[in-house]
Amino acid sequence: MKSKPLLLLLCLIMSFAKAQNNQTNTITSQETIKGTIVDQTDGIPLPYAYLKIDKTALGTVTDGNGKFQITIPKKYDTYTITISYLGFEDLILNIAEFRALNGTTIKMTSESVSLDEVLVEETKEKLPSAKSVLRKVIKNIPSNYSNAPSLITGYYRETMTENGEYIKYTDAACEYYEAPYRKKKYKWRDYQSPYDFSMSSGTFNFEASSLHRIHFHHQTLKEEQVNVINSRSSASLSKREFYGNIEGGPLSLFSRNRVKYQQSFFGKKATRDFNYTISEELDDSGNWVYVLAFHTKTTKEDLDAVASPNSRNRKQWRKANNRKLLKGKIYINPDNYAVLRYECSVPNQLKEYFCGYKYNQVKHFDFKLDIRFKKNEAYYVIDNMRHEDEFIYKDSITQTTTYYSAISEFKTSKINTTNIKKFPKEDNFANTMSNHLYEYPLDYDSKFWQNYTLKNPIATIDPTIRKDMEFKKTLEQQFRDKHIRNDSMPQPKAPIIASSFKIHGETYTDNYAWLKDTKVPKNNQPVMTYLRQENKYTDNYNIPLKKSTA
Image (tube, rainbow, N blue to C red; front, side):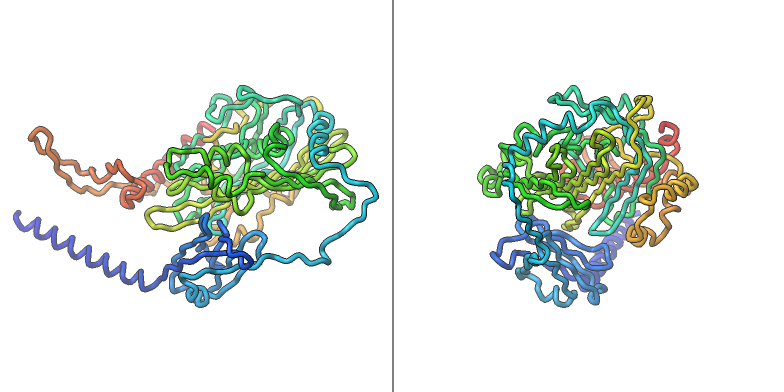
């Protein structure tokens, strides 16, 4: 019996030696490159520039000061890396060139606009002021958009990328009960609560890696509804154990309709928070339209002035969120002042500020909208919508920064404005934080999707998505397997590691004390690995239960 402690000690020493040897091999087979990306013209750092090793899922982004760190295995020495930033020319280097730049400053060149691409039109009449056009746009919303309910049928899609490669795919055929456009200031009681599960179908998920949508308006009126006719979703192919989903389904996207929900650049503080300029452009049909460009008045200097080393001081975050850090364009019909399209994003130098999260949580750094309207009989209606959230996840254990993109899109196929009735409440896929279309437990109906795609070619899956996601199974196989329980999945068992302690002179032994990390559990690799196994097993086991309650 006395030989057991000695044997255990010997095993621990051997394990440590083996781990050290493996660590040495790992270190020699890869190299960590650090540096700073700046504007070649003035040396200003470029925050959230993308670095991606081509043909791989390996990449990172710079931080708010333009700094980056990326670990590159030796096996990628024959590859190239692309550094990209909005408004700048892509910089493509082979890995050997990139390694040689370790610890240096990398300069990027601004894109130049060819004079041949600029169309100058002489106008006989002076353009109206930007703010007068904005006021007329807001005033004419009740006459340009329907004051009665509409039923909009269309195609909805969600995709997610990790380091530039697709890892999740979900889509649906759906119907949208759209409430009338009203000249009314909505109050909180008019909106569906993001925590209200009493009037909907769907799923209930509470992931630690939530995509938290609260930075800009994300709620819809209680009377607005979506009926999911059919949907399909892929496996999750994250290489970083990231499980966050787009929240709220199609209604979450419809909440971004700024003409209806007059937030930000259509809100009551629009003239306080934004600078505007006006110009004219030809649209796709060859008609001249007003283009109202807007840009937040808030600057980097304004936000730095209210910064505090005290983590509890939220002045900077509150100022960033109250002032809406956005820029964009609004395309307007000059005859009736109807909004034909609007697009917006976060200015490059302000991406650091509108989300305060740091490690082990989703940190947003861009918010992109592109919403287009078309005329249907007497009124303008939604034609297509696209919303993209860009964010990073900093892992405090591996010290890696992974960038993600979550995109939701909708395309209208049919509009009905007569005899409109609301759906039964149990058919409504509610716009709540825990309702994720990706987890909606519908069995894959291959015949439905074959017929639907023939009639709606927009539902055809892009070859790039297939290329990124079909390295093990086709997407159709993933759709089929997504909601089938794997009964052969082994139940995870936590390792027994005895730990003794005394209370009032009595000695107790706890075999699972190693799981009780109350300080920084997310930094504890063994704890997190086991908990992920437990979660995966539980999710798999509960698949039939989800289907029975859908």
